[in-house]
Structure formats: structure tokens, C-alpha cells
Image 1 (cartoon, one colour):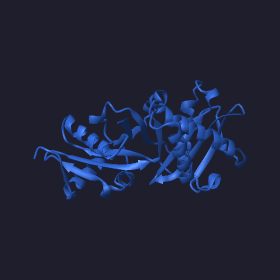
Image 2 (tube, one colour):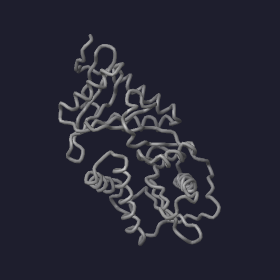
Image 3 (spheres, rainbow, N blue to C red):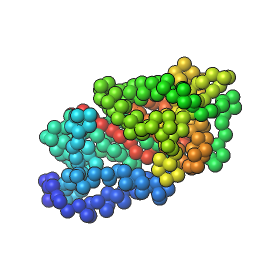
Image 4 (cartoon, rainbow, N blue to C red):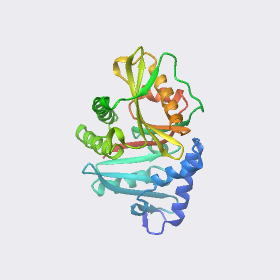
Amino acid sequence: MTEMEIVAERGAWRSGFEERLLTAYRAVGCSEPVARALLERAVKGIDDWTLATDGTGWIAVGVAEDNGVPVGRIHDLTVAGPRGRAWAERWCAERGARRVVVRLTGGPGAFADYPVRGQNRMRTVAERPELPPGLTVRRLREEEYPGWYAREEASYIADIVRAGALTPREAREKSDRDFAEYLPQGYLTPGHAFYAMEAGGVVIGTGWVNHGFLPGVTFGFSLEVHEEHRGKGYGRAAMAVGAWATRQGGDEALMFNVFGGNEVAMGLYDGTGFAVVDEFRSIDL
């Protein structure tokens, strides 16, 4: 077989696909429960994907609406050479997709020229992490929550737009959906904790974490140093607060997302040992 052919039988492909994902997650230090939890998220909706082969490899693709815009997704690509990617992009375009997104584990491979839109990073934290000298951490007070929320939402929208993933309107719509999903009860949402970081009695940043996001994993939704206090070494201090909060919640590993285009943050995370678990890249068609 030399031409791409849509196939219905996916048993052989699926077992290999899932094992490749598990191997990649284990390689970056995920425990078996975490690797399998990530796999479960990665294969969500897999029965709706379209699978094709040329006899040498596989392509799994799909198109779904995101913010009312058809978005193509290349879920798997093992066909060697440029023809496989070209076929996948054409398949998505023919079904109305205006953008193609890929979620990658183990490196960019055939998608090295797709811009990075975001990464999930993770590492195990010390059993008894210490807070940096001169920095104190307290729970965010409920009356501070509205101001925190407004600042956090504005920062989130700006990060999405800077990454080039969505337009400002799409970014705001995504922000509204995401905050409603993750904080349905606002300040009192179970499993979520909010912190204020202070230096010299001044709040220099805030933290927002979700304990038990995955087995033994705290997700750091935000470890933010306020703009007027950046460039003073507080970036690494904020990461130490994330590690401290992780252990406070009874977890052993910290995971978070970093948006594409934030090279300073990526350099910080590289230097503090946070491995890339998943990477998201996309192009406009």
C-alpha cells in the first residue's frame, strides 16, 4: 500500500499508540499512576478520531469546534517523511479547519516548525522544601479574592494571546470557560488553595494551586510575581513556594503549564529541573 487509506480496525494501532505515550511519560519521571492518568486524558474521544495508514505508519486526525471555530488535531503521526504531515493538514483543511493543533510527547519530531503554544511541565519536589529567606507566605484572604481574580484573568488572556494560540476575543471566551470549569465555587472551590507572597510586608505575588490534580500531583495554575516586583530574583522564590504548597497539600510532584513565547519562564523552568511532559504546537491553515 502506498496511498493513504482510512481504516476502521484500530486495535493494532491503538495498543502501540498508548504504549508510546506511556513510555514517553515514564521517561520524564512520571510515576505509573500519573502516566496512566495522563494517558487517560490524552485518549479522550479516541473513538471519534479518523485513522489512516499507507502500510508503513499511521495518522490519527480529527476536527472539532473550539470557540465556534473548526480546529484540526493531528493526534498521531508515524508515517515517515513530509507526505504524512501534508496529508493530515490537507484532511483537516478539507473539513473546514482553520488551525491545526498537535499535542507532543518526547520532542517535536515532524512538527519542529510549528510554533510552541504551551507546555505542561512537572518535577518531584523535596520532602521538606524551605521558603526563601525574607519571603513569607499566607493564605489569600477572601476579601482579596475579587482583585486577585481580575488580575489573574487579565494575565491569563494576555498569555494566550502572546502565545499566538487565539485572538483576543477567543482568548477571553476561553478564559471565561476555564475559570468557570476550574473554580465553580470561586474562593471556596474544594482542593484549590490561594496564597499571597510577601516581602517586607508587601505582597509581591500570588499563588493558585490545585491539590490532587493527578495522583500525588499538585497543579500550579499560577505562581505569579507582580510585574512591578519582577527582576528581583522572586521568580525562583515563587517556584519554591509552589514546591512548599505541593507538600502542604500532601502531594509529591508539582505540575504547571507555561505558554509559548515566554522564553524567560521556560529558561527558569529548565534551570529548576521541570521536565516537559506534554507540548502543544499549532499553525494557522
